Length: 263
Ligand SMILES: Nc1ncnc2c1ncn2[C@@H]1O[C@H](COP(=O)(O)OP(=O)(O)O)[C@@H](O)[C@H]1O
Ligand SMILES: [Mg+2]
Image 1: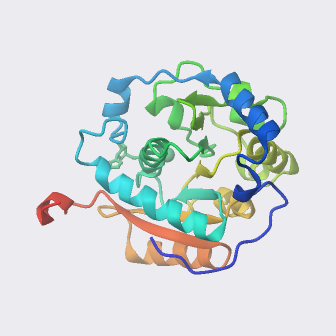
Image 2: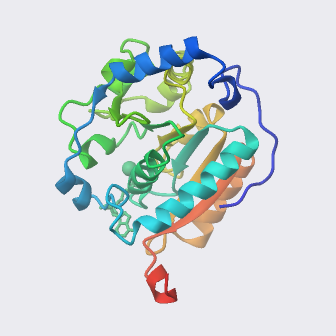
Image 3: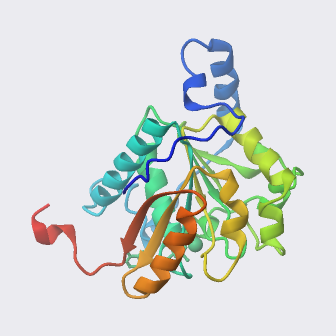
């Protein structure tokens, strides 16, 4: 992961430093919001089938995600950033897989509250990967027609997950709408996540990512070693750097494993 070292931009919302033990009333409200979210029962078979390895620390693969988590957390804390988009040049590079693994790895960090939001409105996958039986409609949440309790589930008391049950027409327009910005701001104020991961669509085939970028502090670009070309990665990275902070480029599906180097 690397930082381009840009300064943090104010978003007119509560930042990391605004919460804490000096604000007991605020903490009570936050605790109440979390307790009001439906608890998520994890389907371990579905999770394993979908390559979610950070739920079970006995899997050696979780170490790579823990490393990514720790680098990301450091970068976010240093810059007072919160919101991270995950995208890729084309489909099936592993965005959802990485978003989920990162989210569960972050959940093991007890002093950190994380939210994971499925904003791949064209191909929602988070609900399917976790076999969530009744996901809410992200379209309703982003239009201000559904609240947090209808949209977010909680895993333990520090990871909130918002799946999406169906694809949305005109997703780019919705992602850049005032109602979507308002829904996200409400979520930030009430859930008070230290980290928000947004699982977005691929960049090269849609304008959804460009439409949503004003809502994030930075982006993780996922490339698949068997699929993404250098030129695709270059085009995406350059386009992102003109608009936001590129927090890192992840090379997924690599055939070289860490075990080969003894770790
Ligand atoms: N590191 C990996 N190695 C092998 N297969 C992977 C890896 N990461 C993801 N996959 C698989 O690739 C497919 C696409 O992954 P997914 O996370 O759904 O991509 P995206 O969200 O970018 O469309 C899924 O079947 C997923 O299980
Ligand atoms: Mg996906």
